[in-house]
Amino acid sequence: MFRAMKAVTLCIAVAVSTGVVSAQQAPASQTPTPAPPAAESGPGPVKGPNGEVLGYTNMAEIPDTPWRIHDAARPQPPIVPPGRVPGAPPADAIVLFDGGDLSQWAHSRKGQLVPAEWPVHDGHFETGAGRGSIVTRERFGDVQLHVEFATPTDATGFSQGRGNSGVILMGRYEIQVLDSFNNVTYADGMAASVYGEYPPDVNAARGPGEWQTYDIVFEAPAFDGDRLVRPAFVTVFWNGVLVHHRRQIMGSTSATMTVHGYTPHEPELPLTLQDHANPVKYRNVWIRRLSR
Ligand code: MG
Image (cartoon, rainbow, N blue to C red):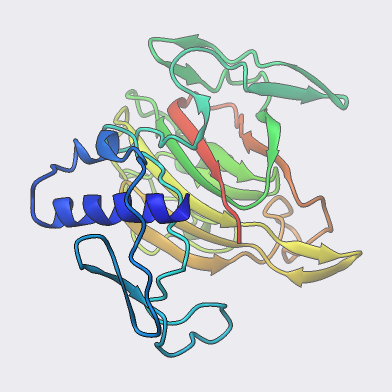
């Protein structure tokens, strides 16, 4: 199986590099099909059916891996067809909102999950200010997350009172959602900040009412009993601009009167979208589990 996938992927890679397959056609073309086995080889290059070199068996060993450099036996990564347009969910994403309903979300009230009451219309949903935050029914640890949001066109309010919501990873670690277009607030509480810890490297805000994107890579913290053995890290692209590069999170962002710290928790927890009593729209929300 690996050998077949490898051969097909190599063919696609060659086709793309020579311009035969356009970027939009490429995803649909990557269907694994049986391929002739590579010719038997001794030490040295491993050749495919056309005499092409598919790898080697005698290169240097790569430290801390079972593989040699250009190892012909190294498995090909699984094929994951990307979304057909930029920002669309790839094939292995868990779609948390595709314009339809909030069935993947709930309110957590007195320990019980009840259906999300935020209004859904015209392909997006809104915070439903005053109804409380929503959480995913599914739990997540390490993830890649895509979120699109828009603060109100009618930009009223100031500082933290204009378009305030939040993407709260594991219900503890908030990437702030705010209207930060001509709206000054404390830097570590502006849009895309790790709330109360780090401002984004730059302000990449779009204007009120415009759709904006967060693409987040989150590495969950790890605990051994009560002991933190690995802190959380977060990488954030805001409207395609890198604003946090594997930032080490200090701890739960909820406590503002004390230095942030970690409280041990489960390896997977729901994702939260915050109701901060401001109307904010969301659409096209998807997530991918990451393994390491
Ligand atoms: Mg917030």
